[in-house]
Image (cartoon, rainbow, N blue to C red; front, side, top):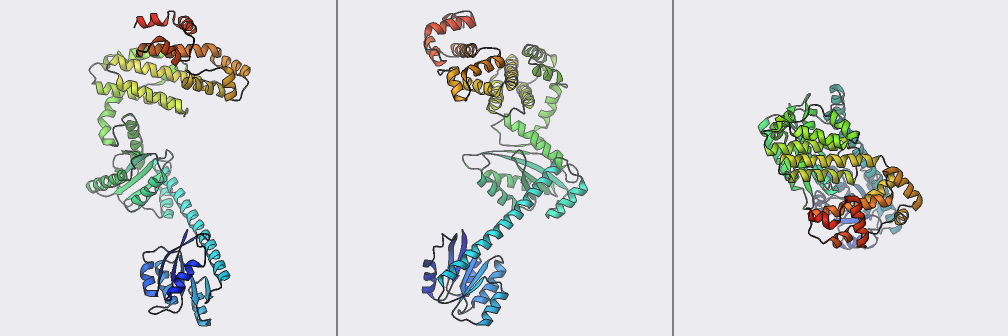
Length: 505
């Protein structure tokens, strides 16, 4: 909606103009009115009007004088003049002021309507041009700043690009902070942009990871720290109850050649925040000692572990873990550092499967971190990592399978307690049941029935170990309604009956 401001010294004309048109249908709304030019000029300082409709002959200030004065306040505002006099001198002066039309009273409704329609079209074009120009400028700015922080632009090109964009980094120091908003709503983006724009020492853009990047350019470290702390508090104040913010801050560096270092450090801190959800704001300097201790304890060469994972050699990987955690260097390390070491291993696993961006990958990493936080001993940490590595191997193996088989496997994981059959799944995934059975066997090495039974029995074993549920309740929860068949399948895959299995626990 564009905003219209109406000025006329005759009250009945003011009210009449509001009633003679369907302003909403034209995409307009009346934002204000006044009975003389002086009053109108004062109100226009506060009211962001797009169109001014004014009588020409008024006390204290004429309509043309109002248009001239208002143009200095709002140069983009369009003006339409109303007059009871068809005088050429008025028309000529009005044209010199850039008025859109000169309408005689009594107003011809059709001409008035047509004038406003044309004005709306002009405003639409002007707004599109402005938005296009702003968008282009924003994209170019974001691209230049991101290339700078990634070390992908040489100093001469950077200086040229910043000059074209009207940006300058005049102070000797720079520090980068990253803000992750979950979710990053449009409202948060708009409020953050408005907040940061009001602080000339800060520059912002959104990087390819959807992080708000704040670049602080300052002279003195003490004042700079105060400015950054104040802004970050203000950013946190933008967070709605349903949002979660995580802020990571790189170290203070020289603006000329070290800005990429501060950005990279802030990204490293993000990984720490991911595995420590209880923290919301962390500076890289706070993690220096942790990083040095971890580097001393973690493997120098990860390639052997990578080969075992990519070869899907779970047994060989488990053996390597046992050797690693039984090494003399592990003795004397604090429980907190041992847990951090295990977490670094999970981050390493995540790096190996970084291209598998789906729900399974997120759940797998989350489960690994949970197991580590629950572990109470070094053997417990090693067991959590062995389990996570085994799941990684299964996930990598699954990615090599047919897409439709992956869909079936995912569905089994979520719905193994339901009545499942190739016929039902074939209908769900739009594939003939017989062909689905053949593809499933080729991809997994098992028939659908064998895989489903084995999976259900594994889930039954988990419940027998971890719950006090009765055997018949567990059987039904994993998809078996016939107890005789459940006992038969359990003994086939486990070697003993479920009752005997429970008795051994």
